[in-house]
Figure 1: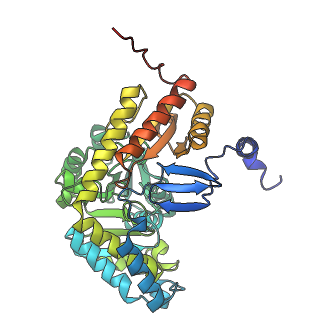
Figure 2: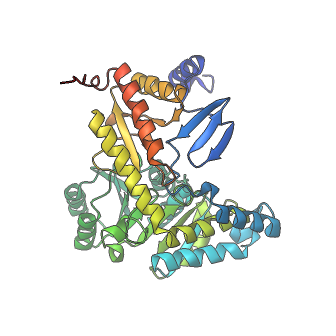
Figure 3: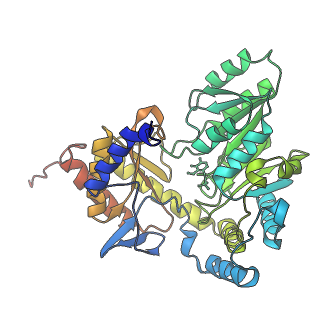
Length: 405
Ligand code: PMP
């Protein structure tokens, strides 16, 4: 059988999108002008689908540190830290992350995907059990496949289901390791982390929280959901990424557990890949400094998120269960999601289409992510475009006709 035949139905769907020049999975920006604006051809685009939560991608201090590091240390490390050595920025960033989280240990990976893969595949050994929230990110599921532990899924955000599954495993040997996320990337809902922490304590399990979408977003100092819910002491490992609120690329894990550093010589996604380039490390370090010293960014982000979420709800869209910087509008089917996305882009607004298997419950979503860098005018403009397209596609009701008295 020809090698690519197994992708035939996917290829046909993809070709269809290409042929009508409406492919949300293949967008190229000709220029990016700021955290919230770009250009495709001559068209000016308002960016509302970038995960650039704090808008730090063009921060002058972050750029200056990155440039300085490139000029001093070159463009890349050309190898893994165990084989080819660390540069001074790697260790410094790890100490800064440990300090930020108030933990003893921190380890930097080359992406958030690899942080999850590296931690999950290694911590959970052959006789151990991973209990994963059903809606966890692909990197968490892929990490569990890379390892040899038994994998159990529990119902999304359901501590009772988790407790039932731990009860069934009570007499089975091996460690039990629970993995949940802070804010979920598709619908923007947060985990009931206090309840999960209680279940974890009750059953003597370990708890990993992926704060990819909640770092810099939640908590008094921006540490994420564990901080916001005051359960940091119950979270054994926090995983995160530099690719969202920190505006760069890379991933990390922090922990207080003794022996943590052995992961550097047993975690394959850490060992067998090149370490982050000096410029990327320096940018992440400065962005973390900005996150810590400019709480106003987080407050502005929350204000913007609420304005957009409330605005879409008021228009009659079905949105996720709570306001967050990830705001998704539920579409009746993938075709409508593509049509909606295309019309928005033609009108100058960039969002994301999210489809199963990436989405929960088989939903077709038009996903937006809000930034601290958006102005209220930009948010209101986006809401106006959603209203127009939503009405044209019969997803929301027509605007009420106002009658003069
Ligand atoms: N975890 C979650 C919850 C994510 O949404 C993502 C990226 N979308 C990742 C991990 C992977 O992060 P990165 O893009 O830095 O590899």
